[in-house]
Image (cartoon, rainbow, N blue to C red):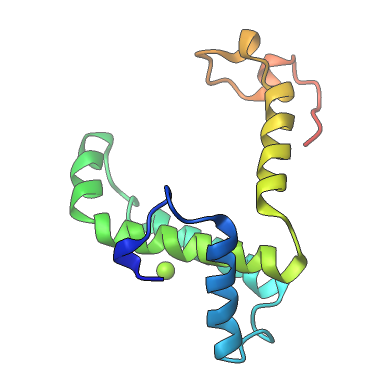
Length: 132
Ligand SMILES: [Mg+2]
């Protein structure tokens, strides 16, 4: 898989999963890519992405995103790679999981109740608890 020939339009999630699994297998790293450590790694990489925005003001965002596009791309890739590895290690079908969660979110956030409204679900529903 040549990175320059790869795009979301032509690559499947399964191909990326296999690429990550091959990387792990080739290095005999399955013992490290266990669900606990990979979950921790997802959070660490998310923090690395957030670090690029630490102390940045709203009016500086566009410039930072432009100047740090390569770093942001790498951090996003790190997060996704660990997400794919997590799915591999616990056997989650990502397409099913994402589709199912979007359906849950659609019922939790009905368009007619939330459109253009940034309020949290608990505020919209008069602080009634919700199920995830
Ligand atoms: Mg990183």
